[in-house]
Amino acid sequence: MSTNISNRPLACLVALAAIGPGVASADAVQDWNAIMWTTTATQNPFLQARFAAITHLAMFEAVNSITGDYQPYLGTVSAPAGASADAAAVAAAHRVLITYFPASAPALDASRQASLAAIPDGQAEEDGVAVGEAAAASMIANRTNDGSAPPQFYLPVTAEPGEWLPTPGCPAAGGVLLHWGNVKPFGLRSGDQFRSGPPPALTSMEYATDFNEVKTVGALNSAARPQDRTDVARFYAASPPTYVFSQVITQVGNEEGRSLSQNARAFALLMMSISDALVASQDTKYHYRFWRPVTAIHGADTDGNPLTQRDDAWQPLITTPCFPSYQSAHATGSNAARRIAERLFGGEEARSILVANPSVPGVSFHYTRFSEITDDIDDARVYGGIHYRFDQRAGGRQGKRVADYIYKTQLLPLEQL
Image 1 (cartoon, rainbow, N blue to C red):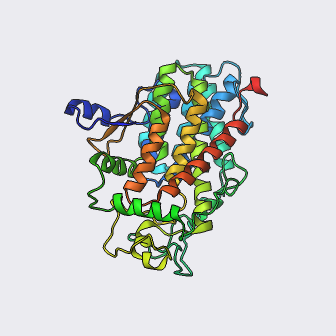
Image 2: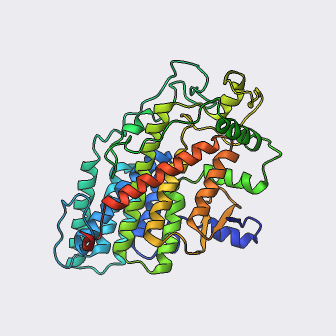
Image 3: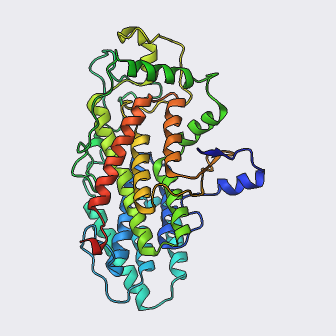
């Protein structure tokens, strides 16, 4: 079970709040993961996961073309003998980020200069930079016209019970990220490869049970929600899977003394799994178009279930995302990340993992197992009032399937081939 450490002394909290994806960095991959997060922090979690996957796959491709430890992703980059893998990682990440975020060029250029200053000057550094630039160019070209733009929106054509309707805060154009289920995946064959089965029937006991749970504990002023679950809901509303699990695998990887090559692969698998999981989630969401709790609770007199009751005054603790409820994107992305972490580091070992976010001051969590993180995320969405428990269960199953497929098919160690 997670431990909320918000009651620790102020100095401890300040230190923990500074923890980000690059905490205790050991190499260029971890350093530039932190820079990537800072650069993409204003993006929505779906776009951020895409940029993270492009950045880390470019770094992986650059490093791996030099070390030759794993099956390449694109296989279009060759490296001269003796090229610096660290310089290659720096150049690859810098080129990806400055291409997509040219307004951040001053900060990115300064970070590049600082990173390369730690590498001895000479032919090895120059060759590494050239390799990194080539890897970035290949990845950027590979993602051109991948379906991530232009944005598309969904306007309902019916108000039948169970159908998604715009929730408070939605734009006039309708539901957002309609197109995301058709974005080209990084490792899956298509976004519908692992589409979830349908949500429970409105008249079922499962629906009534999960409806009444979110209605009780997810209300804005619920007396049934403990403070620690309020903290969890608010923390994970601000902390997407890329941010949380970057911290996780950085800390665990450093404990185990992972090499640059191993870290490059770990982050690449993590980010491509999260990104593809979010693609799969949006495919499922807009396939079923299931109503959010706030809509369901306001319209419970129409669902045909005698175990649900309407409450026109009900409001959720956190703002409802503007797309269908079933199934949870946070559950899908986070469980994909969890499964990759388990595959890379083992799932049963007790660990010491700190997760913090400076945008949620005074709230940090200590975990001993990866599963505790996704358990908290499931609670966060239900206690936050924006998801049913069955959304979380379905999202978790889908995320694990996505990650298992990617782990078994992508970036394999060469000794396995």
